[in-house]
Length: 146
Image (cartoon, rainbow, N blue to C red; front, side, top):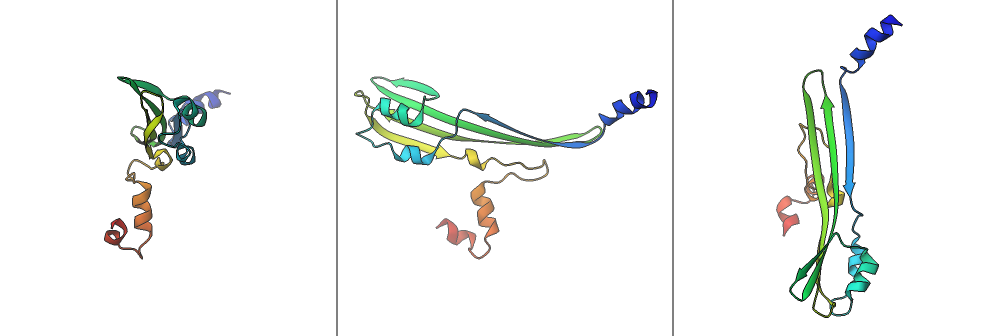
């Protein structure tokens, strides 16, 4: 029993790795935004399709709804004295604008939450598009961007 009590504190000093994932709000889906039709869809229909917005902003007599989903992925290496950590946070964001009659005027969407990735502190965190471009050597990078 005495040996166990002596060894137990030492186990907390051993090196290890960690991974964590944090999300905020519900993911945004591109197909739901495709169902929104400017000049036809109302604010009420938008909430029925997308759910409650993160924020509602009054712009004079007009209104804007903000939707946001955030993903943070953390990884780390724990050594005896030195610890290394890396974090990659990405977000889906959308703004939906309505006129004074509560009819949709336009939508702006940026979906990058899925691009969050785990990487060790000595690795560079890259966008998925950059990783795909680097993984396909048959297409020169200049040709892919044109």
